[in-house]
Length: 412
Figure 1 (tube, rainbow, N blue to C red):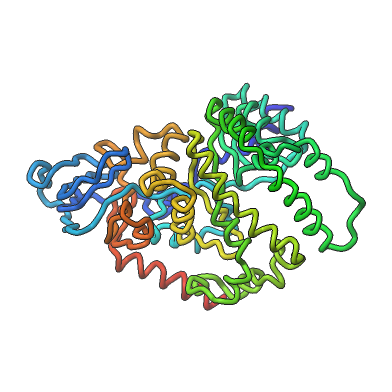
Figure 2 (tube, rainbow, N blue to C red):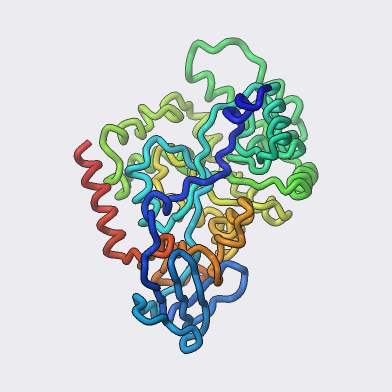
């Protein structure tokens, strides 16, 4: 494989598409000071009450108790009494179809960084050739694990992050080899509904043969190789309960043009329209993956949040907050869930010295919340302001951004 071809093939969206670089070309010229705020710095330390945070240019230049960190002359002062400050959130798995709508929705929801995971699945030979070329070029490999490659093989080969949990459930089955045969065998399909029938039958066998002992062996490999997981629980939840979501309505649909909404309906959606009763039942049982994520986390596997934006009922920005809820349901503490959306992406990118926590010297991508997310993870939705690359966007500004997206959706 030649070097130029390798650069095209490597699923290298490692350099994130930062929302702040599009929306805030320059940091504000005068200092910004947040006073009387409770800081949740995401280092794992307890929340610190009645703090002052000083931001100069695009960086945090001081964090200290009120009275200790002095506001510079002429600074913009924001009284954040009763508010909680966390780092900007990251969505580590999106597929962009457009950015004009997505970026304002991300920012208004406190999501200041995303990772675009566009790319096609590869044949087995191409995958391993890509891995070897990536090693030569010292480029980390991330992405969807091809169907012809197991998640264990991907981890052992050095893939840095695995999306959607890859084939981990297959690898934790006591009949793994039989499941691989079922994947590739069978007569050609002429009836589209035969696909979900086969998936459901194979999937039921997979879930029935989950081996806890084998699972711990697989988890140990992931821990040893430092293979990160981005399970995209939000997309899986939306696909599992798409009928309920379609039937009950959703206020966030006002940000989605009608021309796009029609393809989200179960009758037209690519992933939903050929489902059978067996498949619908299997999908709900498959949401056992919440338990799998909890077990992996307990074993020490590293996680980052990602929503798989572009799927039906996955909304830019909004859906990351529900992803955090699902992490807590899986067994993460609110602090651990928040770290998966803040500190962990910074560690993954090798940028912990500049991102991921609320500390002096860090880039000022921050979110002001009206309630404590450590008490209830849903409080991440109570956004009172966003600091984007040092620029303060109050709640009113964020609402105007949302209003513009809604108006644009009505015109399309």
